[in-house]
Length: 382
Picture 1 (cartoon, rainbow, N blue to C red):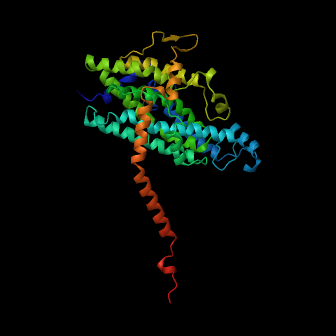
Picture 2: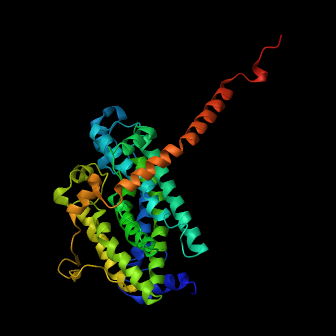
Picture 3: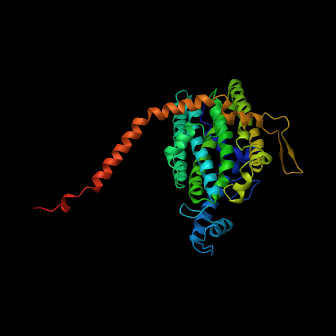
């Protein structure tokens, strides 16, 4: 089969005038319905420019010793809280919970896709998927490093995860049954992640915001990879299209659930938004994701599994069936299809890697001792 990548990327804007492709792929090409610079990656670039500009501003609230007043002034001025700044205990605890869960999700999220590295349909697909899984590992490391700036060690975060006291995203507790699932994860799961994470580039905590700018740039390629896989399958044989449709049917509602419970049931959203850790509510982000995907599905030639999905001109948005929140809570409690399998695999990998951690620690200690030892030129000769 001929390589369809260039065909997909150049034909999407003309295939459907109303397809929000600019909001999927950032500034790779223009969406005729949107003004220039309105793509998601453009938002990331805007956040990066704002971050640099605000670093040079003075909020005029005195020094860091002002405590809560200084913290409130920084947040109100949309400047960044840095690790050495005073912050409320609740703010620190909220960040540790959210950033650790995000880091854990990147690491656990490698498992469902790594399941297909050895079974990818071509060497090219294998190399691309391998690179993507490596990216996810890097994202986890960025986020663990950012979380450590809050005074918690990486080892402590690992122990909390392994002990079941911290969570990861519910979406990674579903199985990848066919190759088309890799496409669905890229288009839907990574697509939902981008919608959720682009606003975090403006998070009030500096290390988290800076990590998210880099992560979002890389996630945009992951979404493109998934979209291209599904497009190839949906325009292939009838059996390939059926496989793609089946994957979308299974991943659609779990992807909607990635945004969390409805706003009325969300425990942390209001305070997180007041502190500008979050910028939008769960339901606002979920609606944005639905609006983005609804017409992209027509370009793919696939159908989203929601008979009630339709454009509402009064709201200027799509009406849709919400996900099963009871199922979401069951998965969060550890009763999803793959919860136990994911954690068992992670525990085994953690134990198998003990020798690497021990060797790295021994090497670091050896280097430190060597650096602290007197150099020959410093010795007194008799």
